Each structure stands twice: as structure tokens, then as C-alpha cells.
Image 1 (tube, rainbow, N blue to C red):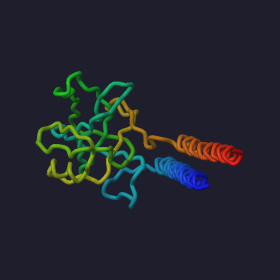
Image 2 (cartoon, one colour):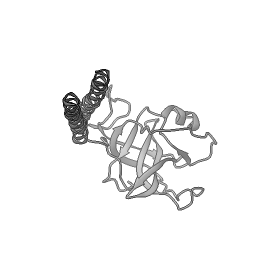
Image 3 (tube, rainbow, N blue to C red):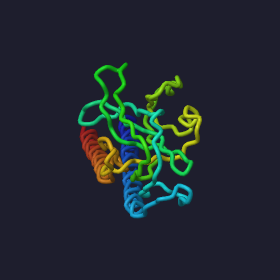
Image 4 (cartoon, rainbow, N blue to C red):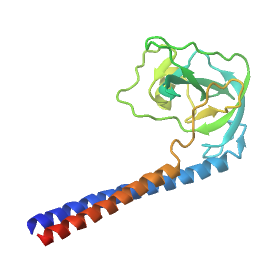
Length: 227
């Protein structure tokens, strides 16, 4: 009897956990769906003036004129493209006396870790078009080293920390350059990394697993009662 009660309690706990994971995936799918809708809607509005931005500029399209700061390139580490390691190249862009980081895209890493890639430079006035996006935040086990050697190789685009290294204020978001721009590098960035369909698929897997656990538990209890 005690064995059956313990088994039932264990089954309830497992099923509750599986259901919780399933509902969490459903909520994540809903968040991604809302984000996709927001991205689509806001990209239809083009911003052209850094001095008069909306309260929430994220995901709007933007076209601005200014100059790149080629002396302070930033390399976002651990960026794979078709199985090849590389970096995302960020450069500060000065427009209307304000600085914003621009992600120009992916650049391949040399075969040896101690060698940095040869970086392109962009001289003179430039007109760039892209999307206002949040800075990319990845899992990081230790903080980046502040050795004041440029280009900086970083694990995250941390605006506050980079502002300290540049000793110049940065806007609290970045610009993902348009793939159609003549100066854009290989574009691998996506506003939504995992779409809602994948989250719905994962949720269905958790729910089906919960059903399977219940079915197998009922079979086990029935066999125990028959003994």
C-alpha cells in the first residue's frame, strides 16, 4: 500500500513538472508572437533623426548620416556562420553629436585564436540604414578584460561597460545594419532567434510526455492491484 502511495505521489510530481514546462513553452511562444508582430509593425516606420526619437525606438527602421569611428572596433566573440567561427563587427557611429554602435555583420575568425581578423574601415560621411535593436546578451562566465587595446574582443555588448572603455557616451541600443547596405558584411542576425512555432512544438512534447507518464503509471498501478 505504502509503495503504491509513494508511486502515485512521485507520478503527480513528475506530471506537474512536465505540465509546468509545457505551459512555460506556451508562454514563451506567445511572447515571441507578440515580438514578431511588434517588429513587423515598427519596421514600417522609418526614423531619420536621433534628436527626436520615440519613447520606445526599438525595432523601428532607421536611416541616419554620420561617420564611423574606425579607431574603436568591437568584435563580438563566438559567432558561428555555416559552422565556421567568427565575430560580429561593431563600430561606433557618430551622428548629430551622438554615438551609437552599429553591427556591420559577421566576419570570419583566423585559424589561430591569438590572431584577429583584418577589419574593414569606412572613411568619410556615410548614410546607413538598419533596425534599432537591443544589445545582444549571451551567457558569459567571466567579465571582459579592460586592457584598452583595440579592437576589443568581447563576449557581450554591454553598453555601460563599453561607454567606460570608449570614454564617450553611447546610446542604450544598437543599429543592425540593413543587409542591402553596400558596406554590410555577412548578415546572420535575426530579431527573433527562435520563432513561436518551435516553442509550440516543445510545449506539445512536454504535454505528450506528461500523458505518457500518466498512462504508464496507470498500467503499473493496475498490475500492482492484480498481484
